[in-house]
Image (cartoon, rainbow, N blue to C red; front, top):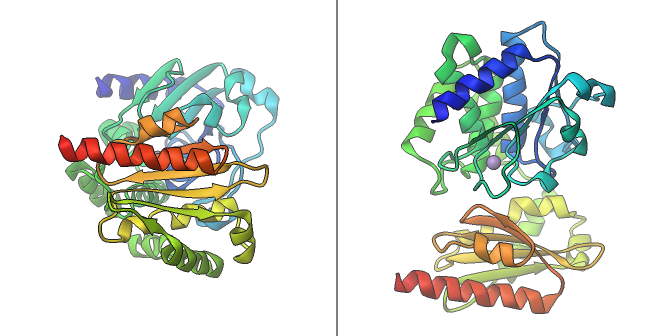
Amino acid sequence: MLTELYEQIYEKIKQSNPIIIHRHVRPDPDALGSQRGLAAIIRQQFPEKNVYTVGEEVASLSYMGTMDNVPTDLYEEALVIVVDTANRPRIDDKRYSKGSYLIKIDHHPNDDQYGDISLVNDQASSCSEIVSDLSFYLKDRFSMNDEAARLLYAGIVGDTGRFLYPATSAHTMRTAAQLMEYDFSASEIGQLMNTHSKKVAHLSGFVLQNVEINDLGVAHVILTQEVLEQFDAEDDDTAQVVPLPGTIEGVICWGVFVQQTHGGYRCRLRSKGPVINEVAKRHGGGGHPLASGANAKDMDEIKEIIKEFDEAIMEWNDA
Ligand SMILES: [Mn+2]
């Protein structure tokens, strides 16, 4: 039962000091929102506790706050909470394992079970929705506040593509509405998240012009190092162009393949129906049923992935 886990997590937080919160590498708004939103709730509820958030900074998401420097010896006594991270290899800052107790809070399929307590709700739109659930369930014992509400709202908006993706439930909308009752500007958050740098705007133009779409509805675009250089863009900038092929009529599954500096391609894979995380797993990745990541060593492997997408669509059409 989720509510039993909420109680267990609450008890552990109450007992612990310091508390160090981790999330996944290359964080998105949900990773940062659930990480910093949770920290904001704990800090207000338990002002005597030392709460830290760790991991690499992302300049483009600086409106979601900054990270803390934590000396390693602090881990010895620490409760470590990892949010929004399905697999241990993806946790940012490997010192997470040095804590005295580990809690996992996540919404991805639970392929890698870790943590002394593991709160995994793969029906939730986002990890920020789960942290909101935790607070709204515990009420006065773990109160929501303005800062946390702003961060968690941003996380939900981020992971649902502004309430577009199928993981957006009636409960997601009710949670977002509850968060909006707090004092922050939801519209400002929406605008910030809808604003791209000029280089990403130009890269978006490239993606829309060069995407190839086959008869089955598989779209793909290759972003070589040469293309990235042309737009002065880096691997991280490509996250923002991933939804674009899905906005084109007839596209069901798609991939944005980003050439890496060390060779090989990072594959950002998406679907509007057919389950694709099994495809991702066959190519060194994984993730959500409709949003996954993988790795391809060369163009031949990219072609294989596209072929497997064709098959996934054919099976889905037959079902
Ligand atoms: Mn997430």
